[in-house]
Structures are given as structure tokens and as C-alpha cells.
Image (cartoon, rainbow, N blue to C red; front, top):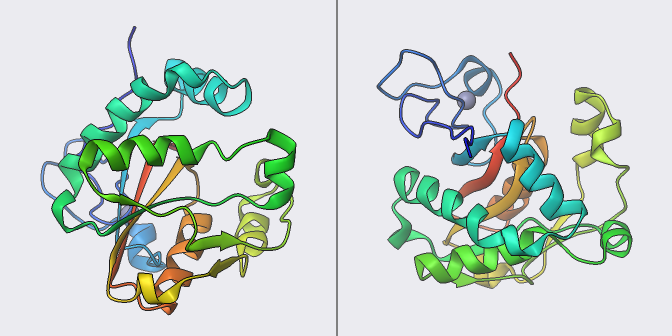
Length: 205
Ligand SMILES: [Zn+2]
């Protein structure tokens, strides 16, 4: 099986977008123009081919046994991109109540739980929540996604967040708008650093 693994060096030091032929770190045009609220992102795979099928099967068809394999790739990317010993809390990207009813579970939670155990850091599933019921992100344009994701995150336990380094775990990084909004909410509650880790990123170009 060939998986489209992403390189963890030679990429944008903020969003992790890979750049061909580059071996040192730099900041990509998009991050320079509109810096996201998260400080740094690690994405394990390109959202295509076998990786795409695995993630969609995990997410929508409940192929839960794929979790260990997915976390293998995520853990490797996280260990390369971050100093894991400085992570205080691992937080799964929360879903809205509507999505949870629809799907029955938050697919990021088992991923974040296993990753936290593997790297020996604390999991926190309660501090970050999502209010409102945004429309399905996949049916929106990039601009609409940005608007729609705005203002939907709330921090329930700011005293646990203040001064901490937080790793937010999600399945796919697309525009980064949702991750950035989550990071903004955490920063407004005093988080020192917000790092992002996703199974895959959709690479447009
Ligand atoms: Zn970037």
C-alpha cells in the first residue's frame, strides 16, 4: 500500500504546506498575508488516494479499526514538527451537536485520545466546545467556510487553558479557517501556544 505521506521538512513553518525543492523552513505566501491564529501545524498525509479512502471510511463508515494506523502516521508527523514534551493538553476538534447527532460520535476524539496516550500528554475533551450549528463545511465555498466557522468556538474552562501549550487534533486541514478560529478562541482565553495536528491536508495546486 502506498500512502501519500507529506514531508515534515521543507515546508511552511506555520501551516506545514510542502514546497518542492526546499529543505529549510520558510513562511508561505498565504501565511505571510493572513497569518492563522495557530502557531504551527503538522499534517501527516495528503488528502488523496488511499489516505483519503482510509480517512473517509473512518469518519463516515465507522471503520474504527483503522484508528491505530492513522495515529501511527499522525504521531510520526507530530514528533518531527513539535517538541512533544512541551505540549500541556491535547484537545480534539469539537463538533457541533447537530453533527454529533448525525454521525453519532466525534471522529476526532478517538484519534486525539490515542495520540495523547502515545506521546504521554494529557487529553482534554471538555475545555473547548462548539456552539451554533454551522452548515456542512463541505457544501460551502472557501469564503463561506471562513464566515461560517466564525464565532462558533467557546472555551469552557479558561483556567486550564491559560499559559498552556495546546495541541488541537482534527482529521483534515482544508483552508485552515476552522482550525484558526479554534486557535483564536484558545488564545483569547490565554493559551500560550496553539499547535495543530491533522491526519491530512487537502493540497490545492
Ligand atoms: Zn503556510
